[in-house]
Length: 195
Ligand code: SF4
Image (cartoon, rainbow, N blue to C red; front, side, top):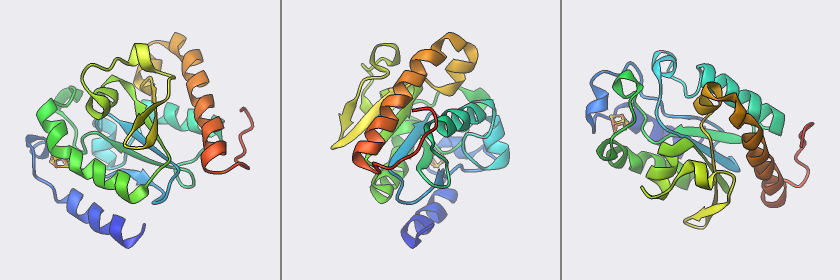
């Protein structure tokens, strides 16, 4: 982790800016490489993440890692993973617009530091809070969008795939588009056994 990211991490881990600070066990800063070509944005930490202090470690996270592996991506070499809010909302409820707004500067700073070519938005909440409340994941998944001169790919959240495995086929097509774009913009030699 570079010095700027380490400084940011220190600040975020001490954050008490919203009411989600009250019941959390850990602030989940995010993880991955500092200069990742892809930054993945989820909704919020869940129970497993709050206990372990790392993003996407529960069943959803394991599925996300499998999908990334099929793309030839790993957390340690290709991506940075973060969330709209960094502390777990009670009972895993969706973060409120106010919580998201208060936490957003941390995510924006991460995006600025990582400077990724591609943002992957996992699910409806990440899509709405990044792109606007009128956006719909069912309509927009798999379609490239732009956010402040960066390419954005909205995809279903892995938790949705666990609830409804029939979404997996479409989702795989969406991630294939990310791999092609990654080769175009980041590394033409990027290897994936499946794409
Ligand atoms: S959710 Fe974000 S703004 Fe709220 S306390 Fe946690 S880090 Fe701070």
